[in-house]
Image: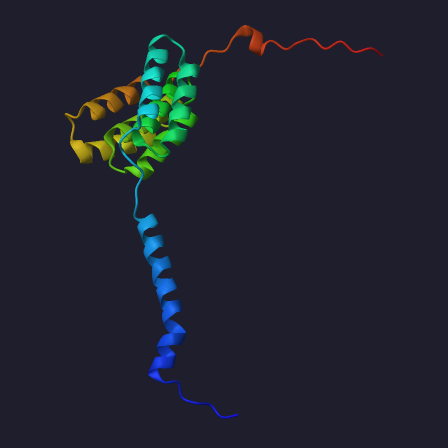
Length: 180
């Protein structure tokens, strides 16, 4: 068998479709990677956020969390929805879950002052004042001492951890009766 040299025409005919397909894949994947979620709330998500605010005002925090979670499914990774969901969870006494949503919001917008302050407040309420102080220092670097978020977080750190209430029924052991 002898090898023959490919002519330029044969080379183009053989490898052009492959090169076009690869460039199309590269262009499509790069446009998907550089797209970001919409910052604008859609009408359905906006209605759910407004409903959650009314539910919180009425004292129905669990219903508000449900509305906000529905809004989050409509607008994934929307910072406004994440911050509202984190605040509602803090009101419900679930600081750990609130921290999750604040950190998710910070992934989308690392310089979001409300997310940094909220995360610091949730940390202070859990008793992690050293970590909350780091958030305070970060806020002071971003917006200074006169910023409302800085004052808010500073006050939360001074208040200290949230008091946990335990009922007597939860602590009292139940007698167990067994037959011999």
